[in-house]
Length: 108
Image (cartoon, rainbow, N blue to C red; front, top):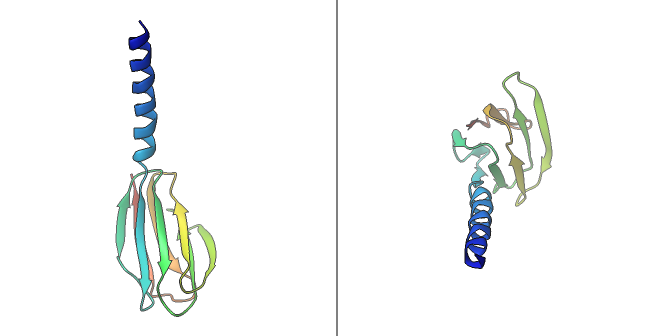
């Protein structure tokens, strides 16, 4: 009996750990006043890490399907802005300072 209870506890712990393992971080660099990719596809609960490898300040805004912005503030060179996507949908990331910087984020 004790062995079965421990096995059940182990299975529950493994299930909890695997649900945490499903969330991922996706790196997007900013170099030459451009995003390193034009689009990413992620799962709900994943984070996109925007790294500023430029020598200029950026200002990332995340826009939802209705074009409502979520301003992430000024991002100095060398800084990383982490954005958690907890809702499914299609989003766009744009730099408010450099209008040519655009990318799409698809969240399933």
